Image (cartoon, rainbow, N blue to C red; front, side, top):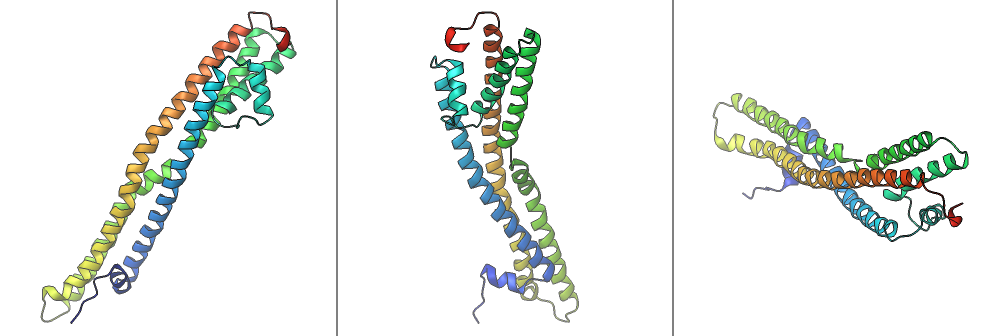
Amino acid sequence: MTVDHSVLHFFTDASTLVKGVMLILLCASLISWTIIFQRGSSYRRLRKLARQFEETFWSGLDLTQLYARITQKKVEHLGLAAIFQAGFESFSHAKKESLPVEVTLENAERAMAIAENREIDEVEQYLPILATIGSTSPYVGLFGTVWGIMTSFQALSQSEQATIAMVAPGISEALIATAMGLFAAIPAVIAYNRYAHSAERLCNQYTAFRQELTGILQRRLYKPLKPSEE
């Protein structure tokens, strides 16, 4: 007699609860891989934009001209560009209103901090979901396995002649839940560790740029504006 050892066969023969566990793990795996591809693409894009903006910022281009390029959408408004726009816009408004130096710097720093937090939220988006899937999926799969094995032994206890052949199919079906839990967890854990490092590097880059820009704006307050900046 030919025995079907396919995953679909194990799924159809499993108990209702184990089927539910398998479906939950399948959904978790699909969500995990969706986030993995989305975050990977997003981080590559954010790193590229940060590198391009830093090259433009340190190229000697006047800050007023750079701000105009951002407002005219010639530079994408993400990451460092968003922090720069928020800070320089607040700085320019405060100077036009002839506010005290301390107030001007405080307003600019506050605007940049708010923009930085917003960009960091974007960088860290969905990472907690990956962490949750990576940490809980093995236990969810183990729960399905324990339940399936328990059901198999309960059926065995009701049989007059107990053999390993009677419980082997049920145990095999139950172990599929553990395998699915690991299948969902392992990619999520690997991706989380990698992306957490990428997110930390981007966040540190944003913080360093904000501090550098604060120093530049502070120096501009103590020297007269060029005719092109008035």
